[in-house]
Amino acid sequence: MNKKNLMLLLLLLLLISAAPLAYAKDIKINYRLKWLFNTSVAGDIYAEAGGFFKEAGFAVHVKEGSPEKNAINELELKRADFGVASADQVIRALDRGAKILVIAQLFQVNPMQWIYRADQPEIKTLQDLKGRRIGVTFGGNDETIMNTLLAKAGIRKKDLTLTGVRFDFTPFLRRKVDVWPVYRNSQGVILKDKLERERERVNFFNPADFGVNFVANSVITSESMMKNNPDIVEEFLNALLKGWEEAMDPGNEEKVLKAVKKFDRGNNNDIRKKQLDATRTLIKPSVHIKIGTIDINAWKQTESIMLGEKQIKKPVYIETRLIWKKEK
Image (cartoon, rainbow, N blue to C red; front, top):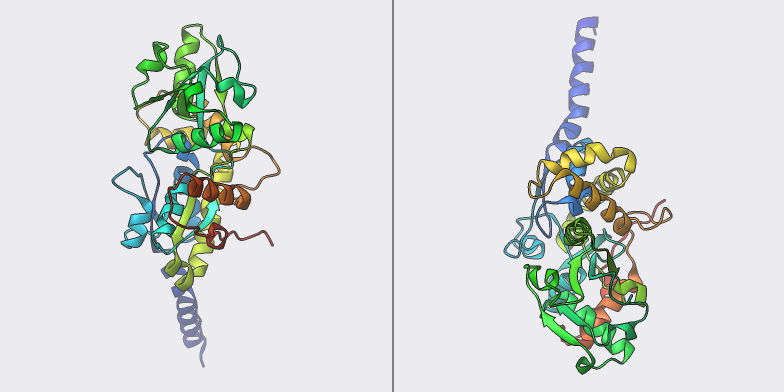
């Protein structure tokens, strides 16, 4: 074989060996979030903007969620390959027979908390809830959590006032409600900032401090995706969690906020920065916790709470639906 033919053969072999890699780099993935784009999904945004998905060989369409665009429904309809859902959504879906799996837990601390003014007595024990006017979203997670807290403390509902709330903060701002439910890293930041500008200090009431760990946003996929494409699941998850790790690194703050700003036009730079600071404490509350770690006991407690509140008809044995790849 002459030198020219040898070179052509080597070039052909190189192209053949590179073909699977080129194909892999064109794998399209649909990833449906739980809610709208804001700083609380900084890691999801940065996994794409920072090139982590592309580096892993994926073209990922990160799509914001809404009540009408539910990640679980989209998985079932095959409109999404991966999604984000809260534990109660997952457990309800399993109760009705959905074939889904949890592959990572994003929030180690639930952002659903309550805000109250610091000029009121501090809530140091659950008994301090007595006599308060407490806001809850009837039918929402916060009502379930509050009912669990009250039952745990043996507090009767006649010992306080539960008031239905909506997205309008006016009743809280006018002091018609004392303790108001918020997502700590979004509305909590906005309300805290607003009141502090009016020289009012605030505190936050976190159910986890009193032993109630109701799991929030987690990454999900379908049984069929896990069965048929386990390598894609692993590689996607690795890229996503790398994006989250980098997004939560204070050293990358400027780049992360720039990426988030392209999607979140509703808040100013100062609020977004404060929201990112708050999100860090919920995603990675300790340097020893790896982002994405699934808290099995918290999931089991969440299922137990939902059973007690009759939100599901039967046990779903949630621990059998949690798939977490430990570090090698």
